[in-house]
Length: 174
Image 1 (tube, one colour):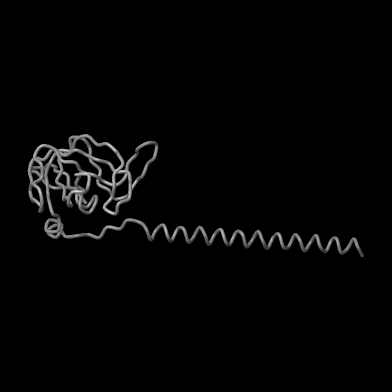
Image 2 (image 1 turned 60 degrees about the horizontal axis):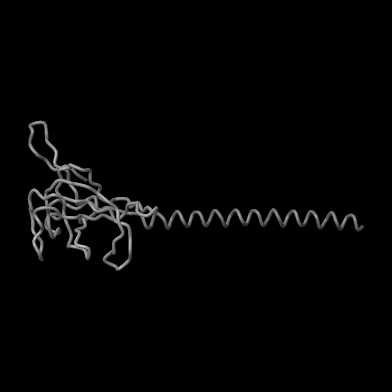
């Protein structure tokens, strides 16, 4: 009888182990699913805004040429320190001037959330990206505490100037 009870305990232990392994698998699957759902809930979503509404809502609109970009630490409107990419913009034309001090005519600083600094990186989907020499029109928000402007609506507030087949300048963007 002792041999049978040992075998029975061994089979019970195997069954308990299998049950625990199965429960562990189910819990991991549920955790993964919940993270997937939560991750999607925090994703960036852009709603199409008619162009006239964008123009009306933007405090300032500037056409200019993108210059150097550099990433650095900055303080957000909420007081939290984050990595931003700062791009110099040489204004060609101030299309709309917002309230407050005038937009400088030599160089303005635009900042977008994200970049790489001190071995740390942050990538933010939907931010406007600038290439040196690019001719752009940007919808700008109010100045930030560091004197920079943020692009209103992220990538939805940046338009490239391109030429159509007749050589006319046209806005190209999202």
